[in-house]
Every structure is written in structure tokens, then in C-alpha cells.
Image (cartoon, rainbow, N blue to C red):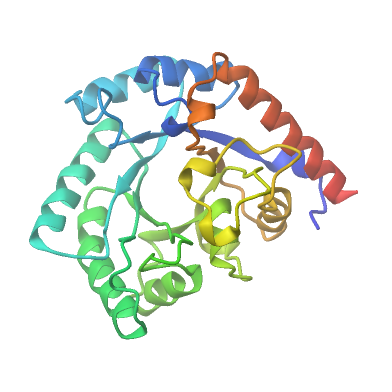
Length: 281
């Protein structure tokens, strides 16, 4: 358990997926209204940066004006299916990240049921990390590898990512994303606080859906009816020495439709802080 008050150790962040209808200015303002300084921008929100063509310098200046830091761009998809097309995509996204002042680029594996065999997973992962290492290092970026717990994911286990990073001696460039939803789905007992660079948090409350059938649209804000064990996962990460950002990343339409996302996020933050105090008691 956490020796000191865990509520004092937790630093919340906000992924743009928590309020995807907001403009960057509105999103950054939402974060600051909650006392949150760490934000994640995305490259998959139509009509918003980065897809709307907003210059990275404009995002950098806006973040500075609002007093937030961009901890990541989320994400380079299918990163472990390395091709010339993927390399060009990685370079363009890394250039944008560096120019907008982002600290890291989230790396998401392919999630279509291919490349899941034991003979493919590690070689594909290592080939991609080997190619990405200089791209990221030259721009001063961290690559945040995010295993996905879905059965069709080509990288489900953080332990495999840790093995690949270690074998390439690339710990200065790559870290893990611990996603509480995907950690639960993968059923992996081990956590790696010392290798974790970012944590994504979301909850699931629907008691009728089997774990194997959970999808992104079940992901809501963390509350009292959470099925994923968020409090226990967060407590373990803090106890292991992790002191990075815990970033809200809900995908459920009901969250995106909230008239007052600040109030809902504030309640979830308060619930987590109170729950951690109880865990530590």
C-alpha cells in the first residue's frame, strides 16, 4: 500500500477524448478549470487539431496561453505493422508533436486479429521500435507503447513491450502506457511502474457485459460502480513509485454528451482521491 497519502501523489491529466466536441481552446480551458495542467491532444478527432490542419505552432502557443503542457499526441495507430507508409506517418506525426511542444507520442498496436501469433508479435514489435527509435530521439520525444487488452490485439501484454524495449536497450526513448481498461481486459497481473510514462483511466459500470465483450464505448468516468478495479490499479502504480499523469480517457457517448463535463470530471477526481485514502487506511 502507499505509505504517504496517495491523494497527494496523484496528478490528473485530460485526454481530448474526454470532451471531443470542444475546440482545443475549450479543451485546454476545461483542463485548467479543473486544476489540470497535463493534456493529451489527438489526431483522430474530425474538425479538430490535428485533422483540421491547425498549425502545430498555433497549438503550442494556445497551450502556453492556457497554462497547460501537452504530454502526448494520441496516437500513431498500427505502429507495429511497419511499412514505408507507416514510417512516413510516424515522421509527420513526430514533426507535429515536436513543433507543438508535445512531450511524447502514443503508439497503438494493430487491433484487427492479425499479427497475434507468438512467432509474429515480438519480431514485428521490435522491428517497429527499432525504426521508431531514431525518429523519436532526433525530435526529443518519448514513444509511449500502449498494449490493448482486446483479444484481437497484436500486443496485449505490457511484459512483451518491456522485453522488446530492454532487448533494444531503448529505455531512454520508450515507456509504457498503463491503461486501466486494457490492463483489466488483458488479465495481466504484472504492472511496471518504473517503465510507465503515462496512465489512462476510465471505468466500466455496466454489469451485464462480459469482460470479453467490453469495447471502447463502454468506457465512462471512474465512479463507485466501476468494474475495472481502477482504485486498486492506481494504488499499485503509486506504491511502485509511479508519479506521472493519470489521464482521463472515456470513450462512451454518454460522457461525450454531458452538458457539464467539468462537474462530472470533478466528481470522478474526488471519488478517486477519496478512494485512495480508504485504500491506504
